[in-house]
Image (cartoon, rainbow, N blue to C red; front, side, top):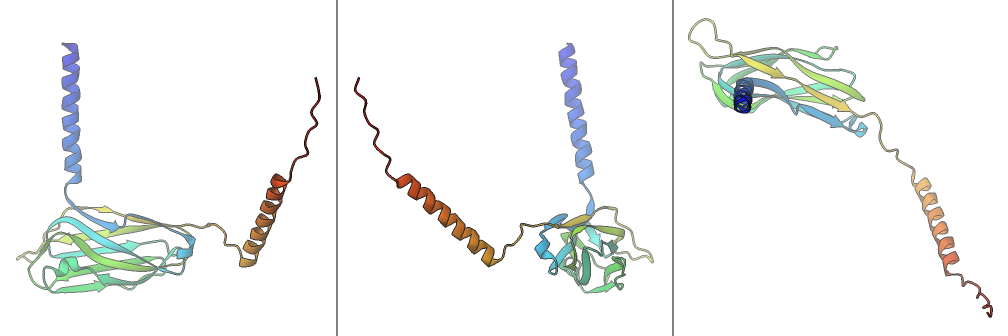
Length: 211
């Protein structure tokens, strides 16, 4: 009986954990995609982009976010409106000027009519130039999602945020000049020739001793 009781408790606990996990996974999420990126040092001076994406949203009429990053690693260049909200109709896409401390105070997009978009997709693509080695969090702040409404105020959409991170490596395998590679190759060939010559040299016959 004790064993049966213990098994029943364990089984019930597993069911509870399953429902708790499922409840935590539900709901609208606004996120940085990709969530994590690692770039080689050679990426310095090249472009890098992330998307601000949304998932499991219903009746989105307008959204607003601010974005923060490490300016010693990434330098903002421009942003492009994503296709998600435009799937609902014509939009008004706005963004405030970037700040020298590595932030965009406000990016927003609003449908011009009392319509909405639902599902998953890209809200905006943010383009950076990689400027140095190190690590940069790409953080979403002050996120607002609104539903359309016939009233003077719009209903907010409950959601969670998932930030991103990019790492630019500071060390790589050193690149040797062609003349150094040539010298190493010549030395390797000479060593191989000496080794082969020693192996092919006939050994002196040993004299047999009579018993």
